[in-house]
Image (cartoon, rainbow, N blue to C red; front, side):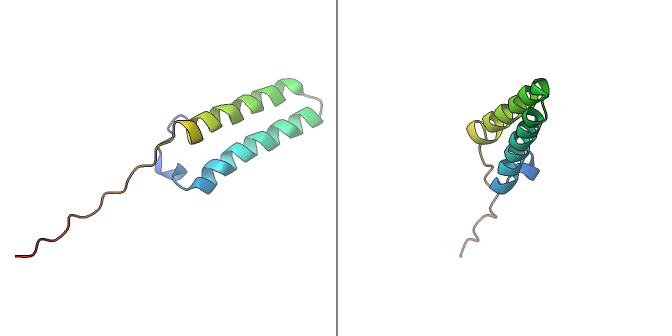
Length: 70
């Protein structure tokens, strides 16, 4: 998750899915009685929200130059 500008994370649904997986993982850990790992997973989710929604700036795709009419 360090490279939040990687092309893999351009679609919004992928960024949402990463955060959702971390949150679900956290819930599972708390439900099974391992709060240490639940807190770790919550930390991952928080970091993902910070990287993918707060710092994320979509890269504008390069457009071909307009053809000039002579």
